[in-house]
Length: 549
Image (cartoon, rainbow, N blue to C red):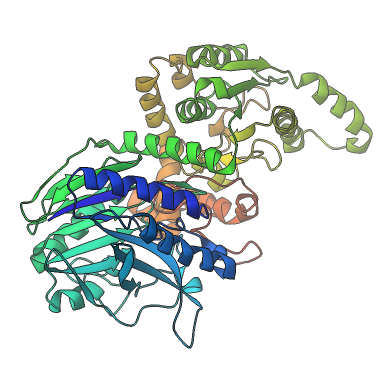
């Protein structure tokens, strides 16, 4: 029994385009001798559609889309499994359901509704969908097949120490006599997620004694990056077929013989993160209708990495680097920015903010009389750079990519309407220590693009004489360890201090800054999620609140 894993990159709301892509993949699968092809969760509509499902017209078009897919593949000798937003038949609760359809010869012959609706981190499915109340098996090539929709296969009591749900749909379908599990997924990427899927599904395969086919969406949709990484396992939990990560792919597996296509992957997690950021940037631009980007190049490591990602994502001809030296910019930083732009082959413009800054100082001098210089003057420089970039964005029709990293965003070491200006925060979920590691990856892809001097110099915003990040922040190795424990693992300051052997006062000061700067983060550009807990849609803290650890 040959099954094709149709790992596609759908665009949310582009139902005709998504259907057309599935028709193309289905024809290719037939040419390769497949008896069935499996597409990801909500592949008709794209995932996640969020509040679009509240629109009656959207749900109707989704229903029309699945029927159109059946109609356009009617002549193909293949069964097709696809996910879609369906009108709910329930008399109570939500009006729509997350559903999968099995179609063959132009007819939909089986439907399964998702039972377990995740409502944590970036997921909001309980907000939108009515849960399925009944699970059934369907027949394929004379065998009973279990069909699970993402979360339905993520609640194995043999694997999880603490389950989120009391009910396990896979266990029920196994008891019905299933000989194969097909799981369609919209599972976003984060570091370590690919290995987690292998471990979890491998445990299920061994426990139930049947093969598993897992198909996952690929592509960037707003802040989420889906890695694909679809695979098939035999009953021993061995991977017998695998699709590439971070690109569309079609692989075929024979689930009876346990043989299939094995496509190259990114075994190193740093390489995977870099590829995730490239894909997320490319798809954000492509799906939003942008073709060119602008980046403020400071000569520092953050903007250098962002530029390298952008070149990989949209091509050097579509990237413009802007150097904006101010009164405290070092000559070395200007030289590094210019050299890096030349190494990447991107257009580079140098626009000094010093004349505008001096004019602002003169204009504000009467009002500021009696007040010593402070962070106000520093922020003014950053905001002049932001204004410059946004003016060029308007003139050139290019999207500004912000260059701030997760460490800075966490503690508020960034300026509203300054360096936070832009349409996409490419590395806002990348801690500073990881920025350096990813920059090494960038230099493997673009040899020596980022000069050695950028790696060697102390990080600095260069907004006052001889300024260094370490004047205001702990060393980044310490800071990132504290932030990982506080933001991603939800540990208390005292637990962090004890586990990392750090002074409690240091840890408390860092966590205090995290709490106080929520107002900045909620005004930031959307950022691409690559860690287990990113600032954005998956982390929801109130701004106006007085709770302190």
